[in-house]
Amino acid sequence: MSDVAGKTVVITGASRGIGEASARLFANQGANVVLLARSESAINAISAEIGDAALAIACDVSSYADMEKAVQTACERYGKIDVLINNAGVIEPISHLATADPAEWAKAIDINLTGVFNGMRAVLPAMIKAKSGTILTISSGAAHNAIEAWSHYCSSKAGAAMLTRMAHLENAAYGLRCMGLSPGTVATQMQKEIKTSGINAVSQLDWDIHIPAEWPAQTLLWMCGTDADAWLGEEISLRDESIRARVGLS
Ligand code: NAP
Image (cartoon, rainbow, N blue to C red; front, side, top):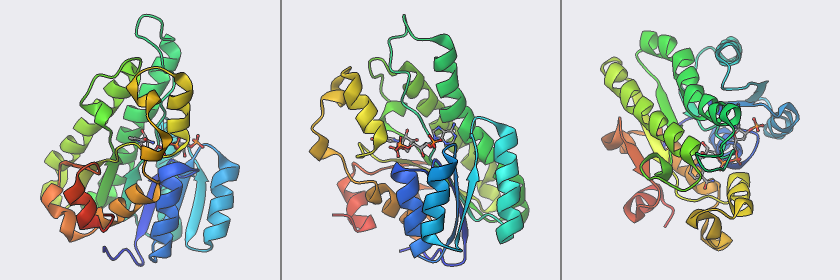
């Protein structure tokens, strides 16, 4: 497994779900973890449980000013950022194109797509200068498939997947490692919202088939190591049994 001891890892959307599980796992492995989310009390509580290796910063990823300030604060505390995990995301508003609320639709794009750009833009200059850094972005099967009532989500995830390819294209020469992770379906608040919607086949899935948030967290840790270098610039799918075996999840 990757050695992240002493490294600084910024995780967006760390107030619950995959982000929280990742913060706990990376800290457990000796990393400094910077937890970003809008729910300040939630990230403060998780950070307090983790201890000195954690820093919670309230941040709306759709605001570049918030993101830039968070990255600056993290650098002041830990010196530099080694890993950025672009994990923050929303599934609402689940609605057909013909009836979607335009403002809410645009807000989802601001979070799921512009939020990923904001994270990359904020960390890239220092990573390029250091000629070192890893940027992992959570993707989805929805980046590659049209799913009823998820036009905002599918479009934003497709855009975020392209940002991973762009980040690799422009920065691999500096030694930067950029990859995406498509986790499959995960038992988090997001899947509860999907189930409640009752729209499309994903909402009909049995809860038992969703994997725990600890699995993508473990995979993100593995992606920080050289064993994952064969996938630089690409997307890793956790539905792939051979990946699960490689990560040690089977
Ligand atoms: P979740 O439990 O709902 O967590 C989403 C996280 O994103 C929360 O911490 C939330 O925190 C944060 N977030 C949302 N909007 C934000 C904003 N504007 N600024 C900062 N943080 C924000 O869902 P999850 O399943 O762990 O999702 C994590 C990632 O996995 C998402 O990118 C999602 O699209 C992706 N994914 C999930 C599944 C699945 O089946 N669950 C499948 C494929 C991909 P606050 O609300 O406190 O800001």
